[in-house]
Length: 228
Length: 212
Picture 1 (cartoon, rainbow over the protein chains, first blue to last red):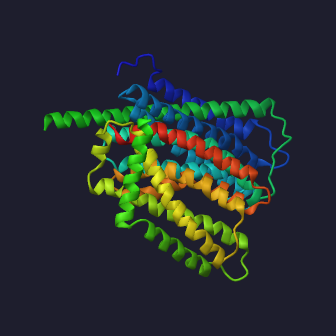
Picture 2 (picture 1 turned 120 degrees about the vertical axis):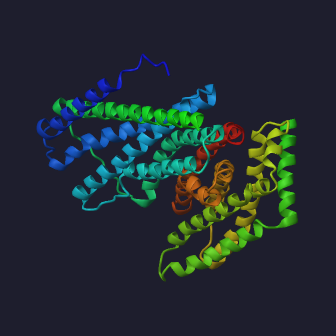
Picture 3 (picture 1 turned 90 degrees about the vertical axis):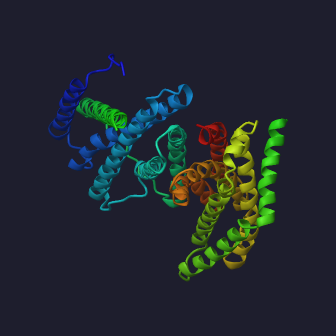
């Protein structure tokens, strides 16, 4: 594929490992315990950074979809799919970490009043349907087009749903929880930034691993066909 | 002007087909009334009017889904898609015409469904009717595009609700909000924004759905 300017995979994997380890150490041993919510507040370092990373993955998927429709780049379809696949994985982690936090903080596994959680549920349903769509068409230019259009709908749906869910709070949950006050500085800031960097590098590493695996698969299939 | 003429010809074809065959609209009408009866028995006595108002939106959404599922069936059964795509017109005209025809069916279905709802449950205000009008535009523009996607897949009827419902959640929020609050302006504006955003997106991307 002639993409020598990219960072080699082993270096990426090492960086991801070091960053994730540092982030875990910072979150558990260095970051101060929240005065109001106690130990459980630490899950936010992961929850928030995973959520942001999931958005990045969906954005990457949509960007590659646009590149496919626009420039007909033959690699873009697979890259878009892998980006969305990673987004769905990180999106599920957002639901799981959010659910754990809701259980500890409010005593329920699910909270309709948490906008972020509800938004990720909608996105989860949307992108799960993307996979249903993708796997019920034979591979080819038509599948690439349909998936690209649906992926583009996703990035429009994210802000629209975000806005809609906030609107829904007004008639479904009149009480809006606000988290305010916590001074966002010092070790809290450092810990958050390191976990954020760790999640982004981890996601990018997984993206590259899956991409090279899928390309290997495709090449193997071509060789088999040529041999048969 | 030829664009509008194309749209008119295509929409006229759909309406004529329905007038001759009558297989979509009667089904939608029967379905929506049946759903109301089901809702009556699923709402325990003394449930609030608000609950029934919310369920009205669910009923209309599912009725729309029924119509959207039928929308591209003639094209598929008569193998007309290739002909339409090869015709010397802009492909987005196919989408616009189909969305207009679906909108006509849905509006007609609501013309019966809303009075029946008022008869069975409770009266409906002007804001709700306006919200339905705005919601129909969004449902038909997104639904037609997604319907064109679903019809070329192996799963077909199974896939349409899966693709459509996540996209319809904002419509439902705007619609239910406009029907239940005292000052519905914000929700109606949201529905209009949704319509504008997704109509442009569907109009621009339909070409890629039907071509390779």
